Image (cartoon, rainbow, N blue to C red; front, side):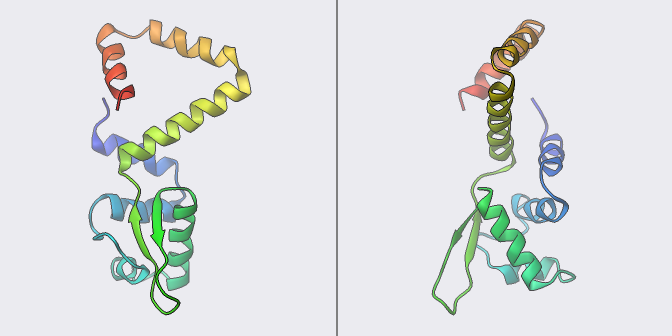
Length: 132
């Protein structure tokens, strides 16, 4: 369906500017996993240590990263919880849940109407995407 560049653009639109910048580095493989704050700073030297640390912790709170807390004098280690496709799928599911909660059956009827207007090939591609 969507190319990787399209997916990355969509993902970046769902994140804050700094969150997106860091996830682009992580998803792009520019930072080896697991990584620590200093690994990110090596690629973003203009940022403050505390800024990067806070942003990584927020990304962990949002579920994009997992964090392993080491000893009290060792840095936390981070790793991505999935790729761009995973993030978009999770975000899409959450948005659909939000719309259904807000609009109820009206939202489901709108989704059904949209599916009816799609070509059989597109509907089949969506079925494959859903089963992942």
